[in-house]
Image 1 (cartoon, rainbow, N blue to C red):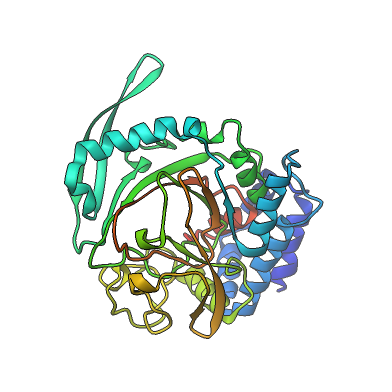
Image 2 (tube, one colour):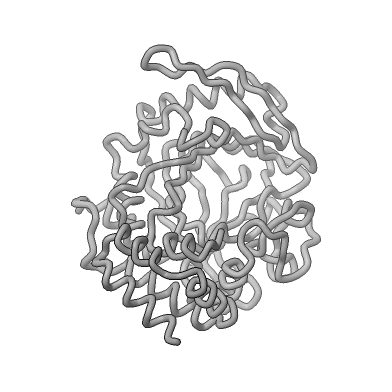
Length: 365
């Protein structure tokens, strides 16, 4: 059975209509779904060919979702397509950030010094007329201490995001970037996370990919980020399926999903994935230094196993924006001094053909 040609026909017959593609996939029997998933599990080349086809389909130059032709938008999209990573300096003014900065100040003021320790923050929300009022915040510390205090909007259920997130998509091209990347005019923000990063004995995140499906993220700096305040690393051009590393890690993550504690090699360093359950998208400590000395954090190249990438760094001023494809390799870093404050925004992860396909296969990856 030619699984690739059959799938290609489902895509072509949909006429770039995601709902038609989903409907077409729903016509497959359970037996057909099982055989297709098994074939992709057993044949890495078929997996690579399939998901590279999806990427080329979504990247077709004559398929445009938005009408935005501004030079800044076009530059951002070009960098994203080429490297999976794009920085837009001063994308957000103090006016854009006003409510979010008030939210950050309210939460950190409630938590006090505990915010320098790893943990999760719950904050009460109440509606008064058309306004949302923030109540008390409660801190739940976790160990080992990896220095990341986090307020996630998932605590409020549904597609809730922090007050002030909507203002980031008013009079900016941020929404256009997401919709053009996903080729979906209905893509919307569904989750936001405010992070406070402080010096700690463990690195909060070693090198990893989040998922196989496209999942673009927007990081916004709520304060200046320097080399000493732990800028995130991104391995430019790792968002595709070009190197042996990308093919192997993504195929394993496709097979095993994001909930299974499994790694492609030993984990032993002072990083969170070495001491807690993590999926196989996290790179072994034998392949790369997941515990870099804070004094060595710098631009340049990074070699992961046998493949070398240029590093993108989340360095900049308050209001700078970073778009990055989280199916590419990225890593946290130790904080040497001070505190890093950011907000991360994610859109619905079912907005692409790849997502529809993975969901049909019942794969959480």
